[in-house]
Every structure is written in structure tokens, then in C-alpha cells.
Image (cartoon, rainbow, N blue to C red; front, side):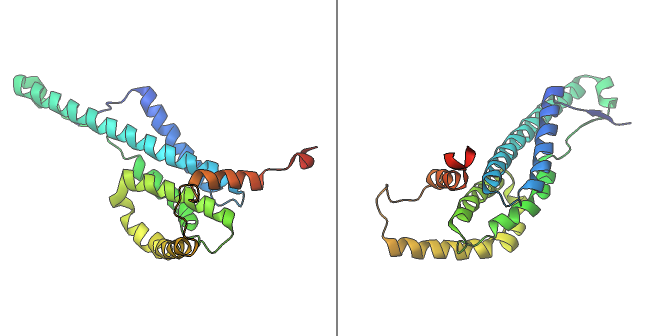
Length: 196
């Protein structure tokens, strides 16, 4: 009979469960038309993906160490050889990525032809895509090739044409993610007259 052993503490398991729930809930709001909400959610998704990946990596290291200890114990003890132990290694990151992809893919398929504020959300979605590539590149490869790459290639070509047309070469002329984020917040926040 197999005995399942978990190498994580209850606190780490709770953190992983919370991160998976955050990602699961974010998908429902990624398609809302409020740009500020989308930006916050995309940043949250990126952070949660990296944190969940780090927890899974630590668990994999702990399992490898526990398996090495068990192998050493089995070499020296007949009783240990009879024990059949399996380490609990259920995947958490890949199901979370699978869950958020339907909400993220439409944001990644946005064209730069659309309104300027959409570009800020597109840039944030690209940062999340970067996190996904860092954490699970082989898992999202096919999805990227079919869902995202055709539009991304078009957007990169368009951005290249814009760069050539404007001849922006100095550091002050370059449009950064931070500048676009600030502009989005400025354009979408209510003015002092509207608050009163």
C-alpha cells in the first residue's frame, strides 16, 4: 500500500491554494472594459504566476531531497525497503495557466491600430506573457503560436514602421511602459471637478 507524503508545510500549501484562487478569480475580470482594473489584474496575474512557479520549484527540490534521503535509508534498513512511499506532487502552475489563458488571449490579440489606451493594456498583457514564458514555456508554446503570434508579428512590424517614421533615437523620446501606465491613469481618473 502506498503512503502519500507531502513535503510542504501547511502554510506553504495555503499560500499555493490562495495563489491558485487569485488566478482563478482574475480570469472573470480580465475582459472588463475598465482599463485601470485590467492593468491591476494583469500585474496581479504576473506576480501570482511567478510566485506559484517559485513554490512549485521549491517543492520539486524538497521532493528530490526527500527521495534521496529515502533511498539512503532503504540501503541501510530492511524495514525501510518494505515501505512504499509516494510524494505528493500534484501540478498547480499548469492548471492555473490553463485557467487564465481564455481571459489573457484576447488581450494579447489586440491590435495596435486600436485606441492608444488599449496599447497600455496590451503592454501589460505582454509582461504577463513574458512571465508565462519564464515559468512554463513548453506548456504555452502551441497556444502562443496559434493564438498570439500572428497578431504580435503584425504589431511588431507596425511598431517598427512607427519607429522609423518618427526617428525617435534619444532616451527621452522612447515611450516606456511606465509612461504609458501613468498616461492611462491620468486619462481615466476623474478630474477634481468631477469629484465634487
